[in-house]
Length: 175
Ligand code: SAM
Image (tube, rainbow, N blue to C red; front, side):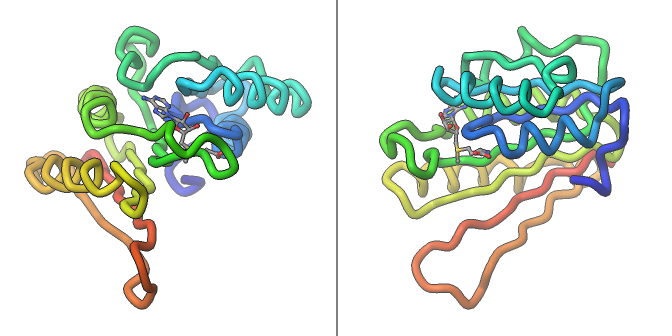
């Protein structure tokens, strides 16, 4: 992310959770940039708001207690998005039944593809090992593999020597 995101950029944390990525992104974009963060869990939004306040980063961040599928109604229409991060699945240490789902993830990813800056990046950390995870991973795979290669570069990174279903990363970059 730090190779793509510059001070002043507009970026998205699509799955705020404990706010680690939100805080990291807010530091990268600085006071002239902005982070839009989304989570369906009130506790995640509150926890992250406190972390941002403690780090004096809250002016650079808008937190929305709603699903990332609503992002088109929250993001400014006229500002290209430099980077968006999705950490899919459930919140570690939280309620494992609250997970991201294929339909809403794809709604958000598609909306972001239309708003991505040139060289902008959507990063998805994909977990397929929990109930529901495989269906989401498959739907995402089906979507990204049909993206026009003239417009997007899509890469997948993952462990190839781990047992079970290790997480992997999908990166969608606008050309
Ligand atoms: N990046 C986070 C961190 O640094 O702690 C971890 C994110 S956790 C793997 C996934 C998060 O996605 C959970 O907090 C969950 O509430 C949230 N989530 C589930 N469905 C969502 C949706 N439709 N929109 C936004 N967030 C969602």
